[in-house]
Amino acid sequence: MGSGKSTVARLLARQIGWIHIDLDRRITDVTGVSIPDIFSQQGEPAFRQIEHEELEKTLAEAKSLGRPTVISLGGGTTAQPANLAALERSGATLIWLDCPIEELLRRCAHITNRPLFRDEASFRELYRQRLPFYEVAHFRVESGIEPLRVVEQILVLGILDKVPA
Image 1: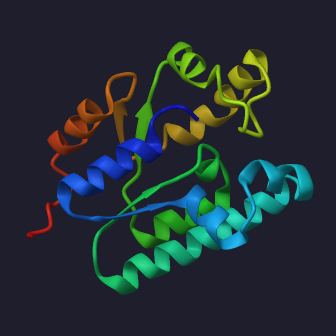
Image 2: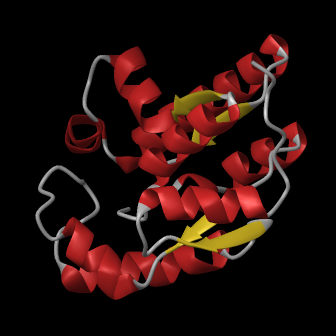
C-alpha cells in the first residue's frame, strides 16, 4: 500500500492505449461495500475470497476482450497462492513497484481507511511478510519517485506494446 499501483497503472494504460482495471475498485463496485467495511463486517478471509473471484473474472474478461489490460492489484493480492496461480495461468507479467518502506510510511501516514494499516509496527511487519511475494514479480521498478517517472521506467523495459490509435 502506498507504492502507487493504482495511479501508475492508470497512467501507464492511458500512455500505451491499454484497458485499465483497478481490482480494489472493481471489488467495491461489485459488492457495493468499501474494502474497510468488508474487512470489519466479514473479515479478511471473506475479502480474500471476493478478491480471488474478481481477479479470476477480470483475467477471463481481459482474455475474452482480446485487448491488452493493465490490472492494478491490491497490496496483498499476490500473497495469496491461488491468486498467484491464476496470474501465472493467465500469462500475466507482474511488475513490482518497489518503494522504500520509509516512503511508504510517509505516504500512508494520513490514511485512515486501510484495514491492514493500524500503526507503523504492524505496517512494517505486513511489509516484511509480503516482501517474498513481491520479489517473485517478473520485473521490479523503483516507485519512490513521481508516478510519470515510474511509468517511464516501465516503458523502458520494452515489455509492453503500444496499441495503435
